Image 1 (tube, helix red, strand yellow):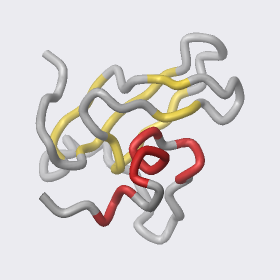
Image 2 (cartoon, one colour):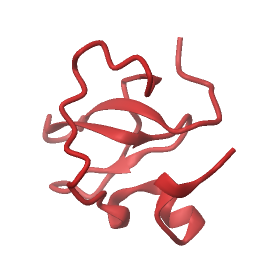
Image 3 (cartoon, helix red, strand yellow):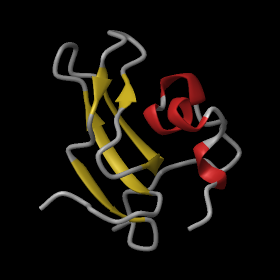
Image 4 (spheres, one colour):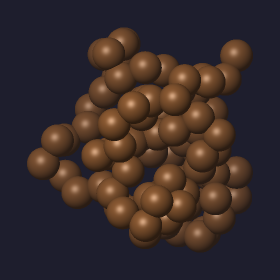
Length: 85
């Protein structure tokens, strides 16, 4: 069952064109991220709330979120991680 929450979540992605895989702590329900190789929008194949990373959250908080690849950032016109609900 896809994640339907309104808050930011943890998502796992895989590009259907080049098979590139990535994870993001800036994932949103029904919003994709662009594959940096193929430049196509990809929806997460798995999402869960940030408070339950299941040990797979290997994200580095100091690493910058690629806003130019994020559908939510593009829609907002700014960094999506600062959205407060």
